[in-house]
Length: 189
Length: 189
DNA sequence: ATATAAATTGACTAATCACTCTACAAAGCT
DNA sequence: AGCTTTGTAGAGTGATTAGTCAATTTATAT
Image (cartoon, rainbow over all chains, first blue to last red):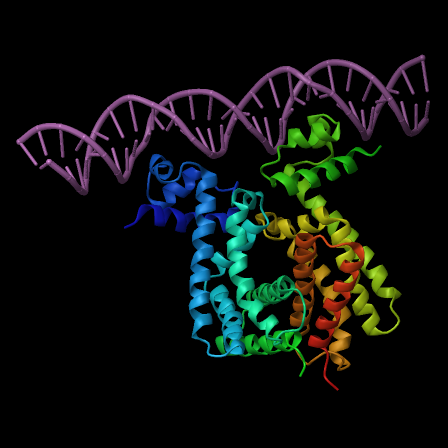
């Protein structure tokens, strides 16, 4: 039984429910079944814990996603995998997905070195860059394409959480949304 | 000089910079040039202040937006106005726009009666509902169309803030993004 | 077996902060 | 002018909480 891991896992649930400042470290520690001192043994400060949780969550999503992307043969399949599996991940782990956005709109974001943020977003843009160059996507800034694609995913997440459809219906609507997004971004032949 | 108003205005700036819990009420009061007691004279609790700020900001945006929407003659113009002026408002008042999202991803959202939230979102869906009925938009749940349109706006906001283009270039790219969104959602004839 | 290092504990502290309370001033009313 | 209500101030309070520390246990190495 891994203590830092269970601290992070408990912290995630509490942060999502009560917010960062609404969650005392003492509560995290006690719910994780460790003492106050142990928590600060693994994380020097509360902020460090929050940031560690962000990095871990973001990396989990990224790893999962790039695995799925690489399973696609042609670009459209890769892109579809990115879109569809982002949403599957989000729906399967709504707390993690919510946390990423909660963090993003909090002052804690400033604690992450700009370099780290840039690195992650570069991975995503690089993936799309090729398709822009090759004329698959419309001739728009790659950053813009990335942002639009990603915001479709965020929007769909909100919709899926709000509506709570059955798995079949969910899958169907994700596919429909993908078609919309794809047709929006590609160059008409 | 209106004290409650300047309290709210200072609070907005501080909340965006330091977060809700990272901003002591004492700091809000002193920066607004009023005493601690005065702040609590106008707002019974800090939470009440946060929620009041949210309601005010949301209503300002809504009022502005529906004014612009109603200036459109046909539906496409109305919809374009919604899209374009949302972004103009967001770019002109980035702190306000950011705050709305910050609030949305915080536990304070739970303090707003579900009824109030529903009322606002109903206004937006009703505006789109007609277009779905009339076959202008694709035959998809109106909620989905609303969510997708709104997330395009959020995404564009992020992009515009990140890129900091000149006004002309900004206007141009907003129009391009509108065309993309429109073509994505309408029924192909 | 012994020594060293690492993990764990929980009581404690120093600071912060939301909110109260009393006192006083200004405005409004008759 | 008197009287009442409302606005304003700011010192004070009680509760909360991030982070410390000295002491104890557990693991590791020699």
